[in-house]
Length: 478
Image (cartoon, rainbow, N blue to C red; front, side):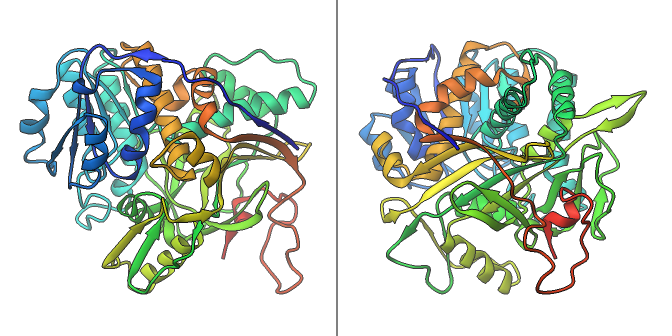
């Protein structure tokens, strides 16, 4: 096992000459404000926060930042935001229920820079029964963003979906591929485009990639009845949990899921399951907690990584890994999801985000690459609540990992202001990793002999594929 703790003095990584508009100021916005000033040269009087409620106004006041409680809707967002944005300004979207595509298009028209942590629809878009399951997916949202990029090439940079995951997950995959190649004795140059990264992944025989996360943060006060508890946005987590499960679909797969469906448009790199992510479990593994059952929550990186790691020959896919999220949130969040399901997916009346009351625990967030002859390989962040508090106030381990991705993405955008619409997979992972590294605790890199078939079959007779452990059929919990 290789574990490295990276610490360095804070230095300004970039300079923002224009104004910074922050939309949304929940747990992530509050967590990142101090680190913003440590990493980016910007005057407090050039920052304005627009949030749907008054939560966090005291924190904004502490830093001398203007705070406006105003719920943005499809009807009012132009009137509120357009006067705030000019050429060279930056819109940082940390909201839920506000359309990322609408804000991205507004920034393009105004010549402003843009970054979000996921591609969000307007409120209700995740559960709108008037449109198909496919059109409520992250796949469909991404295809709309990419269509905009094709129609409006160039222009001010809009970096889509760059937090921890999506965001740092794409960086972790690239570094893991280079590490596996080095440990396998392969002499390779760092790839410079998606085709070269896909060729490297194919050469290393990577069949499946999990964004594997296990959160063990806990408090003395346990979850109460009719309460949803989480270490980051409750609304954000519930929203994505109710979307259909989505995964990049690998070229090695030979067992089509009974509830699986293709979208029938776009890149065709991913499929969806006709069930919510919070009702779909998968087997995965992280270094310290070991094997676990996680939720297959839809995430943008499941689609973008699979798409960017696709090889085609004469128009036919010859290589693609299966990619998906395998999320085990903190124990109280798991209980909250179980209660949510029992309520037929009606959200509990009370919500609680854990931060200052956390007494112990870590967030292990990384990528698990499977299929190589040396075994599965995990690379990622092992961040304890104690280390998170030492590094930055108003954080827990989960929020700091997200903030690390946001800050790294912002710096990259400021250094590359005319790149047009880009995804995390499009940009230099070494630049992102260097900026984010001081906030990620220990970076852990190791091989494991774990497979989803370990200790299977002794209790009940299961329908598994013993010939290839990395089939999604073996990974999914049925």
